[in-house]
Image (cartoon, rainbow, N blue to C red; front, top):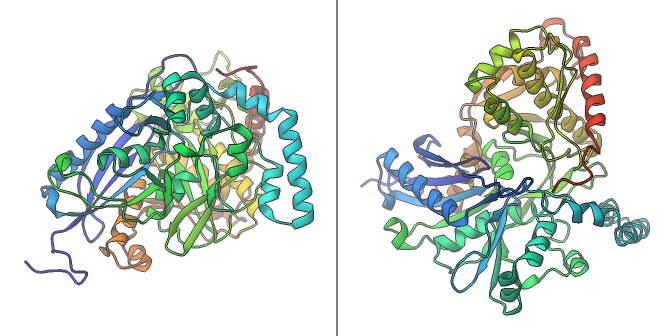
Length: 533
């Protein structure tokens, strides 16, 4: 058979899997980055008690295996034609298991889980934290090292792994015993899948996933010794941190019939950045999925924020380390799914037309904070709420208010990013399931005053994982080749600029009052709960 210039057989393919919050998706990519086969399944979330969100580790692994087999079958190819596997995963969701038996000590505890909220709140207000912040401030004033500035404004969040892991160590006797016997493994979803795929041979993660746990120091590029000492967390349970492109081993031949090289692990938001080819400083990716995320490429140095933007490792490939500054609003997409469950609409595709069918939201504001508010307000005790309801309010007004809240949240994050980073934005890409909604896209571009490019395939993390996995084996040559393969479906242009030539970034008068009302609603939602768990 003829071979390509990179030495692979002509019909060779890259396999990538994205394990998201609600869906496991697998795509088979060809040399032109076209999807040749796809398969997906739902992620089953468990809610054992109010505020607790879990996933069954074995069920998740079985779902992973099923979508891989389904995608390869859909592509009409053989497993032996797959030359590399890349895995993108949701971040901050973890479990622990026995190193010898591979048996989990408990379910995955989701990043959405609020069982540790009381501990987080207590620690953030403790004398210990105040002393740490004060000491870090002094160190920053003396040394001017930005990592000390970051530590001086440090606050814990329920989305970080730290206190949920502490909760698990407190409540699971077998876990504590395994830690004492040095037979315990900790891992986020990528680490668990890698361990299972290699039949227990490899216990590792990559820098993008590690830096998203809240337990990793992006300035020193290692697990945070001071944090582990302060909270008495065991170092022995941690996975080894490797480059994003790395030979992580191969799938055991008994799983797929052949061994497939696992060449890339990458966190889902970072995978979206890579899949959108946001390789340069000032490139921005906005993800509208279960939550809304705004990420900006800050180059070779982590950004230090005082408003809740988080410095994460985008990817580490050889000597290249790329950092992102990230802000997120956790429940924007969740709110749309929740509204569908209440039968405000039957099909998500209806929502854009419903929003356009009314002139405005009739004064209704929606706060999408089922798990609190993130940057820049950072209040885990805030509640989700509708405000401004009147007898004239109908379903279309409610749907419009929900969709507006997505765009408002993105604008809030975008403005925070601009203030905090002072990095000129060079391009903006958008991905995620919610970006299929034309109303949300147009309102977002109007509010931030920038052109937004929507990709052909909206779930972009799979492509990002494929790109890094393909580069790892030479399937694609370099980033320039990947840029040539990138295609956009539609460009959204701010209407005020297109119609009147006004300056980009100026909020049209019709939304100034609505935004002020929404910001007032945010304030009234804050501090609603004394406890979320």
